[in-house]
Image 1 (tube, rainbow, N blue to C red):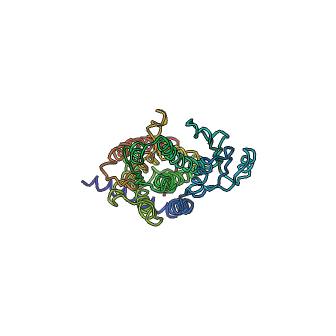
Image 2: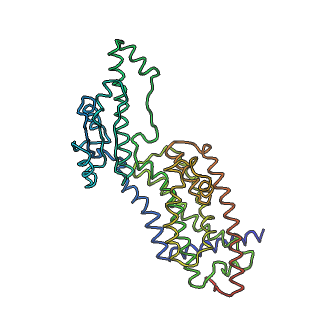
Image 3: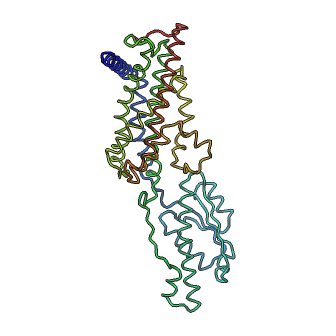
Amino acid sequence: MKSILNWFKDSYSVCREELRRILTDSGVMIIFAVAGLGYPLLYNCIYHNGILEDTPIAVVDLSHSAESRRYIRKVDATRELRVVQKCPDMKQAEDLMRRRIVKGVIYFPEDFGSNIALGRTATLSIYADMSSFLYYKNLMMGANFVMLDEMEQIKIERYSAGGMSDQEISQLIEAIPYEENNPYNRTFSYSIFFLSAALLLIIQQVMFYGMIMRTGTARERGQSYFAFSSARGESGVCRILFGRGMAYWLLFMIIGVYIACLVPAMFGLPQRGCFSDIIVLLLFYVTSCVCFVSFWSSFFHRRETVLVTLLFISPIAMFLTGFSWPVSAFPPVWRVFSYVFPSSFACPAFVNLNTAGCDISQVGEQLRNLAIQSGVYGLLSILAGYCEMRRSRATNRYDDLE
């Protein structure tokens, strides 16, 4: 019993000492304050609108038919697109795109109207500015919505010309009535699409940056985290890792509640999940992040190295959350590689809870994976700690932190 009390006493001493060093390290505090607290606000301010409306486009109508003119009017009436220029040929339309006046072009060939009149397949071409995904999305959505409406109108005209009644036409065109319903992102807002995954990724990346900065600083000064006078000996590795981890765990549970609960409320993002379920997710996620960073920090010996590493892994970690491409479509290599990062499990779980309104039982698989990840990284951290302690003692490379 006494040894257990001493174990927790030593861990508490390490935790308190680590908190003191974090709070007195101006560089780490800037990272935690600016990135941990400021990035969620910055992202939301940048993507606050989340909806791109009236994307300017040009139209090249070589058909000059009633059908093409009707199509153009409907396109101009959509929320997504606005026709700002009607060009006589593609050369002028290309020039407008090159000068960034328009973000897309809709081209009607000469036989567009005649093909429709003769009952043949009529084609039109769409050209999008791919400098932004949103330009492409708006052009495709607006043009396709109008195309579906036009196809229905053409069917009505053809059936009516064949002598069918309105009731018969209605039964043929809409034999099974349906209603479109998009409950999770009705406005196709980019902020809901992007920020739901990005917010939780910030926790992992900021912890990775700050914790490794602290580790690199200590090693640059010839100090070892396994030389605390209150926890010497090989039995002290676990209590040192636990104490250090607890210091970061406490800080990032506070930051996590701020990011996952307060920031969405401040900017009106969906909050369909139960608060207690979000807290449970944060408990698993922050624990996994602490173990993850604790292990990888053993490979960094310079404070500035983490800058390059962070810039390299951030877009990869973001992509592996599955927010822009379904995980089921990942190649096997990338799917296995995604298991390295806690965010690969936590971000989809947060989207399911907070955006889709699932309960904690429906993200059980992600929580289980986070728990397994915590155990694996925890054991690897202990092994890395033993190796560092023995190496530092054999070479007398490091001095005490105190």
